[in-house]
Amino acid sequence: MLKPFIPAGRSNYYIRFTLDGREAFKSLNTRNRAEALERAKTAEAKIMAGDTRWLHPRAAANAAPATLGEIVTAYESWSRGNERARKNNVLQLLRIVSPDTSMPKNASKADRTDAACNARRTLALAKSSEVCDAASIATHITAGLDQKRSGSSINSDIRQARAIFSKKAQRHYSQMGLKMPKTLAEFLAADLVDCHDDHTYVPIPRPQLAALDKEIASLKGANLEMWKTLSLVRRCALRNSEIFAARREWLIETDAGPALAVRNADGFASKNGQGAEILIDAELAAVLSDVPAGKFLVLPGEEVTKTARANFINRASNRVVRKYLPGRVKGIYELRKEAGSWVATHVGLYAAQQLLRHKSQRVTESNYATSLNRPTAIVPGVIPA
Image (tube, rainbow, N blue to C red):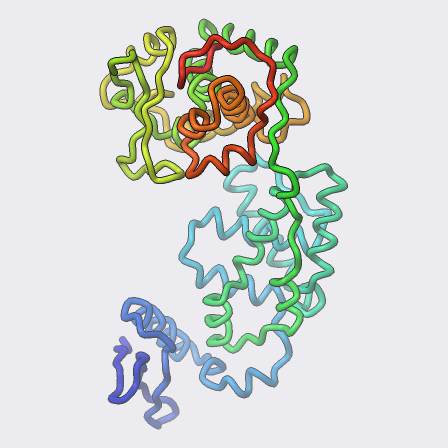
């Protein structure tokens, strides 16, 4: 195996090898040893395969721009990321190039694999210089808005596709002798959808909220895990990530009564980096106290996989909420915002900031309405059902 080394007077790692009977040196363009070892391994494989294009960057500079298929193939062989993420990035690039392409959200692993293969075949027929420009982004945005997709969803597509052309990835492609098109700069710099014109939260109409509260109450007997999930948001303003991480140890007793202690532990950190103690009502405390020690508060069973819990908390709960809140794109997160708005109105911005665990009152003030006209009986930190 080729061994990276740093020559005297240089800062980057190099490799030494014999090519066509002559000794040659090549910079690995990195100071990181782990990265150098990986690049040396890749270089050795290319030399053994007779691929020497990467040794002649000037020749590559005069070559025709690589096709998107070549770039995608190089990306998949280089990327160390999650396999699902790699496939999704490729599929999003195809969606931008071919707006008619779609992939169901619940697509199986086999479906995604087949789609990724089809994407490579399709992209292989397109020159990158023909599609990697601002126009392709603009077309994708227009198509998405016509389909009434949210701006954040469209921006997510674009960012995933752009991951294929990160600076590190482009350096790898250059080492492979692939020439990037000039229009790629337009693709990377094209404007995204502006999703931040108005952060102000619009309170949920009282009839809709009453109907949703009635549905949540009925779930206590029919689907206790869903009742816990929705109650933790509706009453405690927890984020999805906090519900996912919450364990029985989060339930504590304080001088003011039972509380939920949002803790930074076991690989979890709250969004603002700080924990909090949120007072909860007796009904919710009684249900949560039945969860065995050391178990998750929602779906505590040993047989429940991480993916199943994530889908339940992030997707199944959204389906329940969206039935009663049509047009509300954030789903279950609307209940957290409603809780914050209620507290901001009836207790004050400081109490709302503490409940929502925002870094500053400015965030709370700019995001949550303060004009609700709702009953005023409230225990600070507890949202009545």
